[in-house]
Length: 167
Image 1 (cartoon, one colour):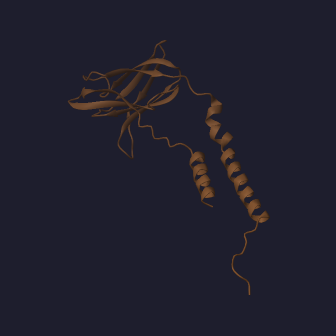
Image 2 (cartoon, rainbow, N blue to C red):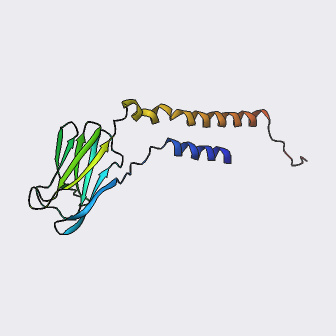
């Protein structure tokens, strides 16, 4: 019985989806508008698609992020404050893989110098890879069912002897 519960625990841990808790990577630190500031890019290893850029520091209205790909295409997004946690972030759609030069202006084209950094964006994953969990979730479940059926068939074919004496 312990083996079945152990296998059940292993199967459940294998079948649960991975937690998406990538806090990102700090790509720039410095001082802007008289305070220490930092920029965090999430995910830490960005792929072509949606990339979140968070600003930790003082920000004015009109703050924005501009990303320029090495081939000249540009993506611009405003920095906005989240309602629940108050974090300031921008969400950019970086559709091409390669080197992107990013410029984050915390005061919207005023006197503060923008934070400049570059990020390398990897190609996006193939679409079928998003369904790997659904494709292979049945394997541990079938293994547990076969093991349980085998244990049950052993118990039925070899009943336990009653050691108590009958009167």
